[in-house]
Length: 236
Image (cartoon, rainbow, N blue to C red; front, side):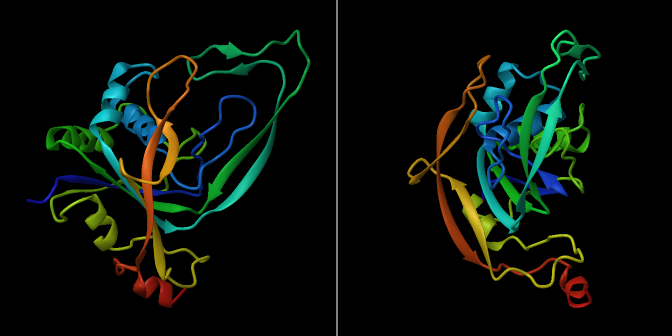
């Protein structure tokens, strides 16, 4: 019997998925983090940062990723001085201290990913409903990184498993002038308790925002076929 799976398209001019971004230096992983995706879903549901429901989401969902288009890194050199407005309507910072904070921040440019989430059908249906009618805006890792398209792709039982989906679901990267040819192979990352790699993005809730380790398996697949993009690429 096929699994019920939720498919998401993560595409945007900029993405940033930090794994050590707790102070002034803000890094980005080469692929979306599970904690970042749970945060994205949390925005759609309207969950606050320390809501226990976020940890429930993390435990109930299994993640697979496929790199549709390899982004390239960019580091933005930012400085902060004085007081700044916050999303809640207040301010942060200290006008009595003129010291300037230097905060380099790394982003992925023009990256695209297929995310596949597995879990109980009821939970996946709730995630779909929240993504189609989000309570808060969601973003690709940071608030400065809005998606360039609706991220919901499908809720499907077409495939046998997350890995089967990663291997077979058609490639669907939006046509852009910078794309001259489709990739020959695609990189995949699958959550797997027997995996030989670790990702520091498991989501236990705590005030210090320290994350646990998650095991994954990375593998490459042959190009799975295109989804309504051949004509755009051939005439690009």
